[in-house]
Image (cartoon, rainbow, N blue to C red; front, top):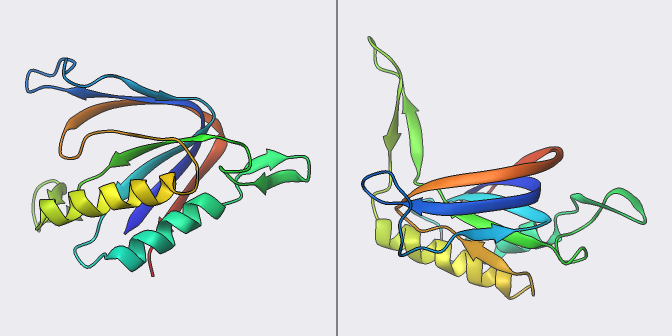
Length: 155
């Protein structure tokens, strides 16, 4: 599991349809101060990995507080999370031609289920979690709250 974490003062996601216009079946999701997560699920991720990574996000001290810079977690500031599923991809470097991104998701059902379980684990920490849509083309907007972006990788 890999998670890109960005501290934001606001963020939003809209789902696009096959024409590239806003999907009317999906309501725009927005958050205020909080975290924008881009979540990649690996084929061998299980409930243990999901719980551990959710705990890392919830305990991550990346907000300023009375104790100084980077002293509070998302729970302590009563922030929100916007969770965006990211298909597992890698950069393929052919011998000739341009490099290209290659999707590696072999089991979309597993990845989708684990992403849903991850979001549930975040919610169990009493943090509002808003979601994109798995497998959809999305338009994501954010206003970064300082240049703070981290990568969390399950070990």
